[in-house]
Length: 269
Image 1 (tube, helix red, strand yellow):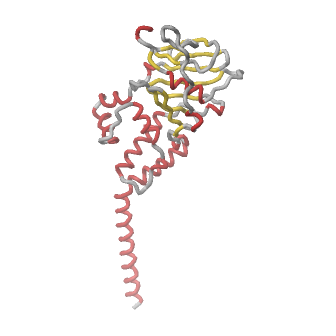
Image 2 (tube, helix red, strand yellow; image 1 turned 90 degrees about the horizontal axis):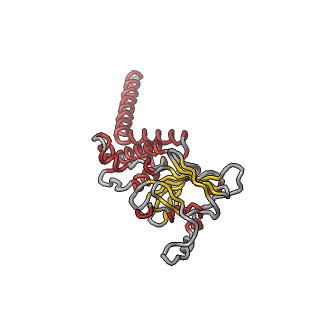
Image 3 (cartoon, rainbow, N blue to C red; image 1 turned 180 degrees about the vertical axis):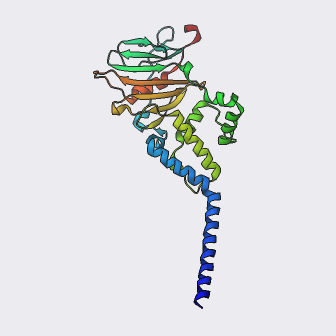
């Protein structure tokens, strides 16, 4: 009797173990990829916490209406300080007073007497990512298509918005495997894009321009701006203050650049 009980107990254990193996195998098939992506995303975020940052709208106070337009002269041109110009683009100076233009090989600096500095990076050096992916090698384009399917972004702004909006918080072991694959690739792209400044990412919009702002001007630290004009061409700025200066940068100052940034009319180049 004892021997028979032991045999029955062993048989039951074997059945239970087989059931557990089957359940684990089924879960591995259904949720193995998702779980792996979820674990990797948590690990990446522990190394680079900025991965958790996604574009947020600016506070209502920062989205105040732009100041009224400057008065016009007899020829219909605005009366005010001259526009800041570089690389076939121009924008309004955010601060009054004199400024000095300092060109370099890769960017142009505008240094204001009040201490603020704007570095305008060469737009010609910015990659047209969407165009490159769509016209690049077959492997690259296939990956691009596999990630977005029928929702391929039509502009660089849309692509950056999708990539910057990816977050480990949006990944779970129970999500669809195709969605997990897509989010995994987006997080890898987000890592490769990197952040320009910290803390935080904000979406910005003004005039015919839209883009992303990195950092917080209220912190007193440098702020970066990645802007896309109406033709989807990318421009990048860094706003900072010279060492030892009492100058400061506000959100309104940055908004003025976003609002006024545009191509210089061909006849004036």
